[in-house]
Length: 144
Image 1 (cartoon, rainbow, N blue to C red):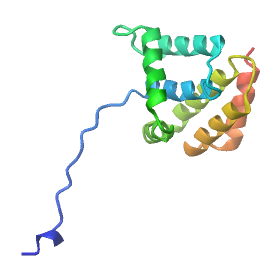
Image 2 (spheres, one colour; image 1 turned 60 degrees about the vertical axis):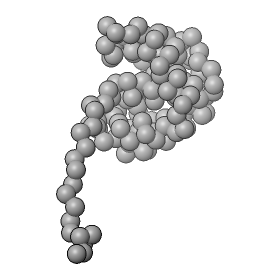
Image 3 (spheres, one colour; image 1 turned 135 degrees about the vertical axis):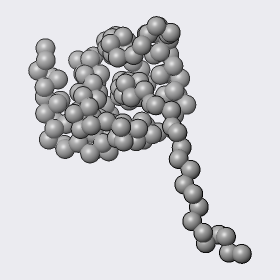
Image 4 (cartoon, rainbow, N blue to C red; image 1 turned 120 degrees about the horizontal axis):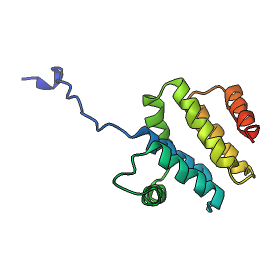
């Protein structure tokens, strides 16, 4: 009679495995494109990161970058990217993502204030200590 009081069986969703490297590259693209233009050095870094981290047997680096650009245009916010990274990466892997973000932001030898803001915001949402974020920035600046 009062069926709605009975516990419903939980239906487990089988989520497709996420390509976390691609998600991290989408976030790096957001950093590079914060000023609505991607410098040639930033583009080169993104393509190299795609080459190193993504299987390019089906699509070329340029085609993958085009897909990332289209995804960026369709996305309302980058919080879904952060959510996926936050729930699937270890702290060390998150630090690697933040390092990629700094490399992307500094690829054109100019750090835009908006690039820095988005990196700090993303790092904060991933639970990374601000002092570690600054340390990664410093390390990236001194890689040359």
